[in-house]
Length: 202
Image (cartoon, rainbow, N blue to C red; front, side, top):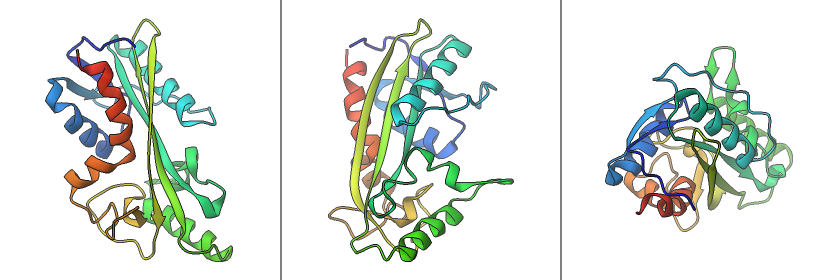
């Protein structure tokens, strides 16, 4: 596994919530994080059908465009009662002509579950795949997940995306209600990040 020796990386994302979360995770390592949006980089088209495939597209594009190592995150929620949807299309379910509308997307998920009379508990998981890519084309992949269930109505405004409808196993609060530090400690991104640490610990 290649070690990250550079002190500055690009986060291959325009998502401010994701930038905040990942930058906080990297603070102990003294690594400066700039976003693709800050550098004016475009968002490449995500054409793969897996989290790893799309993570690779984003990380390699940002690394080659910036000349810096790039970290991408492709993540989403898989709902068992919807045969694993929205999955890699999680963000797409929230797309509108005026930007992403996650309350609309969460309502769609719950409406479809109701139409199918999906049994309780309505199990689901958040999945995250991190890809760390270098300008020379090398990359490392790290995958994480957190199991739980979806609930309704949505609750809390501390998270982002589908957080207000997801309750992790063993908890009563949604990720949207949970103290961010507690969420960071157990999230799918934290699980993937724990594996990424092998690249950071010299």
